[in-house]
Length: 181
Image 1 (tube, rainbow, N blue to C red):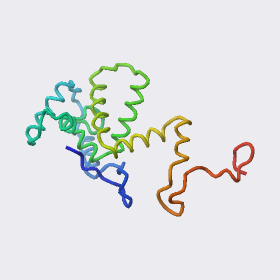
Image 2 (image 1 turned 90 degrees about the horizontal axis):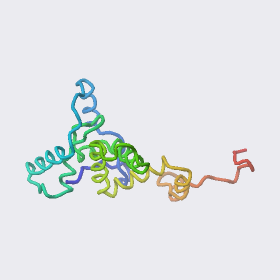
Image 3 (image 1 turned 90 degrees about the vertical axis):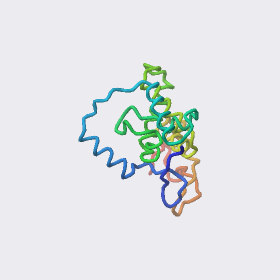
Image 4 (image 1 turned 120 degrees about the horizontal axis):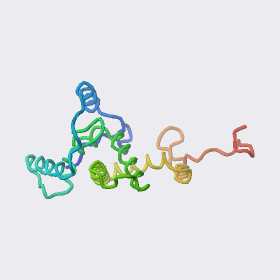
C-alpha cells in the first residue's frame, strides 16, 4: 500500500512538498468544524487500521499495509491515514518526522506517551520509501548544525546554467574577515 507520491516537475526525482488541492480542501473543511476528538490509543489505531486493510482485501498481518492505513492522531490532517498524508502533503509529513526524530534524539519527555508511539509509527512508515528518506534527510541537513550544513557545499546544482556544479560558495572576492568586499 504505497502512497501515490506527487513528484516535482520537470525533473520528477524529488517529491512535491506543497500540499495537494485535496489537502487544502481538507484543511479548509476542518477549520469550520471543532476539533474535539481525543487521541486514540495505539492499540485502537492499529485495530482500526487492520480492519481497513481487511475491508480493502489486503493482509491485516502485513505490517506495511497496517501502517499505511493507520490514522493520524495529531495536527491539521488528524483522522487521515499515513498513506493519504504522504500522497497529499509530504512537506507536512517531513516536518513532523524531523521534529519527532530530533525530540527522540534529545530524550524528550513522555517517550512512551500515546502521541509519541503514533509519531514513531509515522516515522516507520515514511522511512519505508527512498524518496521520503531523501526528503527527510534533506530537511534535516537544511535545519542542521554548521557541520551538517557543510555537506550542502558538495551538493550538485540540478538546474540552470550552473547545473552539475557544486554549491560551494565562491571565495575569490572575500576579504580576510570573510565578508564580501
